[in-house]
Amino acid sequence: MPSTSVRQYLLFRQKKNSSGGLVIILSSFLCLFLLLLALIKIFLTQWWTPTRLQRSMGRQGIKGPSYRLVHGNTKQILDMKNEAIRRSKSLSHDLFPLVLPHYNSWVKMYGKIFFNGMVLNLSW
Image (cartoon, rainbow, N blue to C red; front, side, top):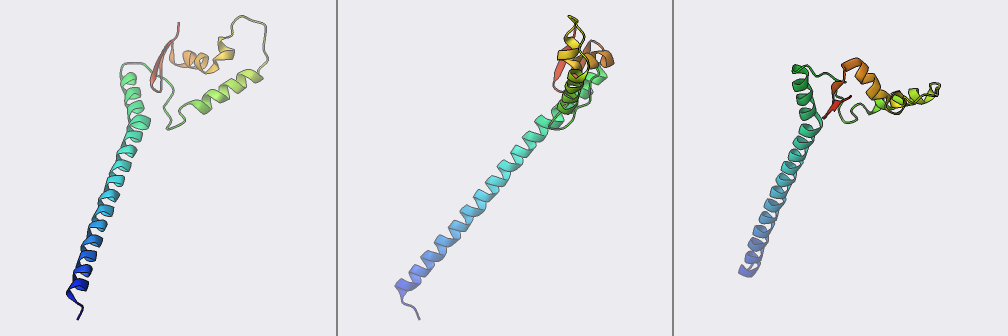
C-alpha cells in the first residue's frame, strides 16, 4: 500500500489533470463558437445582404445583372473588356463603350438606373 505522501501526490496529480482537460474543452468550444460566428458573418456579407438588396430593388422596379457568390460579375466584366479591346477601334470621341463595356451593355439592357451587387448605378 502506498504511503500517504505518495497517495496525496497521486490525488493532486489527478486533480491537476482533470482541470487541464476542462480548460482544453472550454477553449475548444470557444474556438468552435468563434468559427461559427465568422462563418455566419461571411454568409451574411457575401450572400444574404446582396441577394436581399437585389430582391428589394427588383420589387421597386430596379433591375440589374444577377448576383454571383464571391466573384460577383467580375468574369462577365473581364470578358466584355477583352471583347471590346479585340474589336476594331474606330476614331471616335465616344470612349464609354470601350472603357466601360459592361456599363454600356447593362445600360442598354436595364436602363439608366440599375442595381449591380451592392451598388445602385445611375447613368446620365
